[in-house]
Image 1: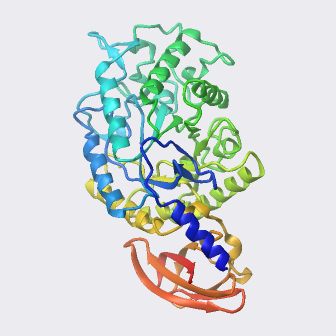
Image 2: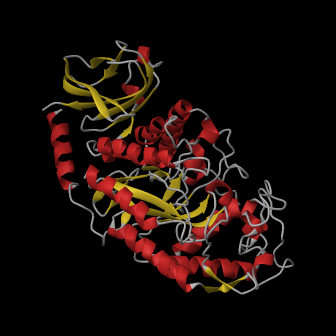
Image 3: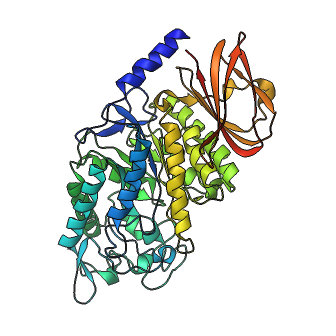
Length: 496
C-alpha cells in the first residue's frame, strides 16, 4: 500500500504544472482514456449558453466573449490545472433557429450576393475574422474546443427528410442547397434531402462521386482547417449527430488527416438508433464501432449515452456508465484506449442535470458538457449549468482521475444490487456514484487492509455531508450511508 501511495504522490507532483499554450491536446500517454494538454492530464467541463453552438455565425446575438469570460471565472475559482473549460462550435450556421429563438443576423462562411444566394467558391472576410477572434479568445483562456466540420440537422431535415421545418430552416436554408447558391443547380444536387441517404452525404468517390459539390465541400473544410491550424487546443469533430454513411465519415477522417498536423485529434459523433447504441441509419456507424477504429483519435459518444437512449436521468447515469465501461473494454481488447467525449447532455437543468453530469465522470468519459438550453428555457438553466460544472470541477480537482478505471468488482457480491458507478485507481482513490440510498444502509468494498478517509458529498450542493476515518484489517471495508439521497457520491482515499 505504501508503494501505491508513493506512486500517486509522484504522479501528482509530475502533473501539477499549468499547460502551456504551445502544448497540444492529446490522449494522456499513461492512460489514453483521458486527455492531456502537454504533459498535464485534463478533464474538460462546459456549460452552454443560448446560441452557443454557432457563435461565429451569429454576430449581434451571440456574445461569445461574455460567455467565455463567465466560464473562465469558474475555472479560475476551481484553480486546478487538471480542469479545463470545454466548448464546441460549428463554423457555419445550420439555420436551426427553431430551438434557439430569434437570431438578429446570420453570418455564413461564404460570400452572400445581393440576390441572397451564396458563392461557395468565396469566403466572407468578416466570418474569417470572427472565427480567429473566437479561437484566440478560447486559447487565451485555456479552453479545449471541439470544432465540428459538418452538421447533420441542417442536412437531413427538409423536403424528403425526417421532417420539414419549413422555409428558412435546415436544408431549406442551407448554402449547399442548390436554390441557395450560384455554383450548381438541382441537376447537380437535388433540392430534396433524405433521412438516411441525404445526397449531400453521397458526393464522395465511393458513392456518387459528385466531383463538383465534393470540391466545394473540400474547399470549405480546407479553409476551416487552415484557420484553426496552430491552435493546440482544438479537436476536430467531423459531424454533429451524424446519420451519414460510415464511408462518408471514414472518407473525411482520412482527408482531414492529410490536411492537419499529425498530433491534431480527429473524432466523430454518430447519431444512435435510440435502442441499443447502434447507428441510427447504419448500425455499424456507431460509437461501439468507432472506438476501435484507428482512424479516430477520440469518439464523441454524446448520442450513445443520452436520454434518447436511456430515458430518465437515473437510467442515463447507470445505463450510460455501463455503456462507457463496455466501450472501454472493447478498446482494451482492440486497438487500445482513446478518450470518449460527451460534448452535450440533453438533461441540462435542475431536473436531473447534476446526476447525469457527475455520471459522465464517474462512468469513465474524458469530458462532459451540457447541451444548450432551448427557447423554452430561461436564464435560470444557464445559471444552473455554470454552478453545476463548478461543483463537479472542484471535486475532480481533488481526484487523480487520469489513473482511474471502472471498478464494479469492488462491491461485495451480496451488495451487487446497490446501483452505482464506481471508478478506482492504483493509488487507492475510489469514487462511487450511488443512487436511491437510505441513511444507515450498509455495503462493503473489497479493499486492501488499512485506514481510509471517506468523504460523502451531495452533488446538488457540492457540500460534504460527512467525513470519517475507517479501518479494516481484512479485505472488506464496511460503509454506512449517512443520509437519505436520490444521488450521493462517495470518495475514498487511503490515509498516510
